[in-house]
Image 1 (cartoon, rainbow, N blue to C red):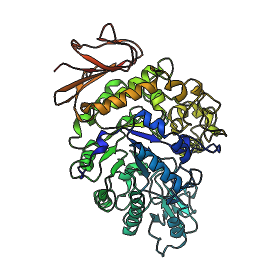
Image 2: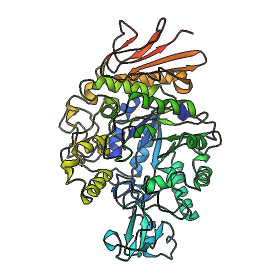
Image 3: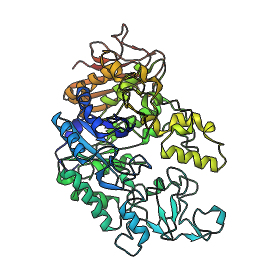
Image 4: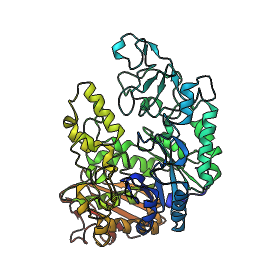
Length: 564
């Protein structure tokens, strides 16, 4: 946070997942002209920044996070001229653009990787992490040749080994994610220079910053040792906060975004509060981080993705309270969902009888905390998880990889055995097409959509909610506007209230004498709060003004201004 230009602290960020936002040409895939057609919608919502998921040229094994060309736009999305129209259209409306950038890995179709695998002694031979492997003790357990085993026991985050044998080069390459996403070797200064060159190419075009995908994984541990067999064996967990990360991030800032009025947002899996302070404090290279601690509340330590753990509100409050009070001069992005998570109303609320109430309650939490709020497309409508019925409806590489691994291990027989957990966990929940209206494909496309449209689009859609003053969309608009008018919601002190209450989440935000109180009911029944609420002024709420201020109705949310 070396720059005094901190516009991003006052911003509300809206995430656009391009292939699911709007399809302008009827091919079933969202595109840049479709986003341009909806810019007035974003302006009416009142957001300040658009975070655009990857639009780079890509074979799309992992929905664009496998980049084939960092300086080209995927043909299905449009071309660079249309992207420039998008940038201009956003800027004309006072909205900034943050690009999603992938520094940890490329596609296996990237020219660097193709050259690396065919010419080990050439210019690009050391651009990726190659190893010959170890002598195999049991050929049946090796994914490579019979006499060579993977260099260590790391597992891919998407399932299976984190190493794939390449017969052309005669070696294993590391991929912390999908096998089509080989990890770059950041110890090679030419790799770093190549990445910085591509970042600067976009900065020169006038973008307003980057969301840096899994940026705290770019430095690998010395010697690539085996994991602790009793712990997490994913390569991701072994590479968090590697030994040269500080050096790489400082160099990146100096070479790229530090030269511009641009924000650097680090997606940082498994980061601790102390590490976040270090990276985003006064001398830190990043402006904010996106941490994952609250995303793990519903995961069992042993079964992880494959089970849903019951959690209570006090656990969520402890996580939120710690990050709200412990960052000091640091900063983080506040989010409840994104393209990698289930829909927030299905995960943290009630997507049935209390969909509107719980969606607006969660909006209140999101937009009244310290930090920069991130709204994922569709959450402002209260979009819900999709009721997947067959494997063929899925596209998410992470979900499909885990299913295949479980079948191979004999854990399940097929999709039917995994249906319920897939419905809860799969990233495709957040990637189904945006619901614009009640027509056959929700106004997203005139063709066959790349992912199925949620059947609830007939009642949950922009057209219906735009004209309803009590809709989730209308509530988001009011909250976004209120946050922009209320400095205490941006940078005010955070003070937990009722920390042990298992139904009510309450906290104060205070700045220069402006004292605010947030009350949230996370329960589907009424709950009473032991607070004095005399003389308060209600600024916003998702129910009509109550007869008894101390009683919160199911999933009720209120924001009060307290007397000085």
